Length: 255
Image (cartoon, rainbow, N blue to C red; front, side, top):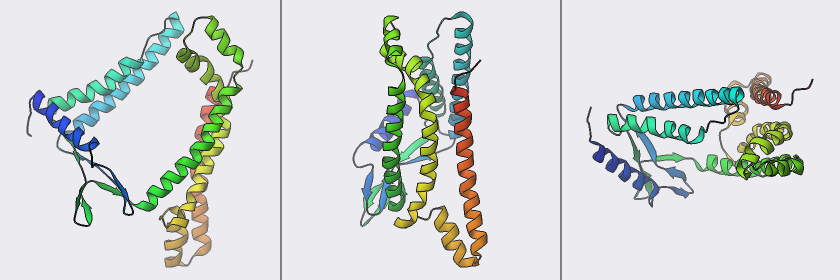
């Protein structure tokens, strides 16, 4: 294993970051989306373990802060300590091991790109279309949920001297979520069903694999369509179950 000093590691990471964000690093053309690729060398498992430990520490910190606030009423700030744990612990592991993660940037050589990772154009078009389309509906759902909170709630918070950010996080958003979650569940289910439109642009999605390739090879139409329906029913049921559990958690307790 090759070891570096702290200045060499920082310089190497700075060069990798400059290559990643500097032009040309990302290409979008008729061949797809070509992006830099992360290369995990020896010792990257230690960095991954450090990141997992940092996430567990953040979860424990938030749980402790919540219990302390419920017991004493004193609010413990967790944002900056959480960011320090998420960034600092993996960074310390990287400095100790010697930069086990690097970036491979794509380069144009002749008529093709070498290096990096490539996302096919069909998937890129599907991702952009579904993201833009669904995001518009979700934005309207969120806007309607925020506007459904009575204005007196915000005025009462301002009268108590709360800041706008604190008012939004502790008063407006918890009440708005009770209005947002039910229609948001419908949008997630619609997103799952709208992904079948990928067949129109030639992307090999679930429908294309089952009802296209597999059906042409087996000629078992009823069985293939039944399996396709079962897969989509499972995905929709899991999504609906997760959102219903979250909705039950955010719902007001009635006496």
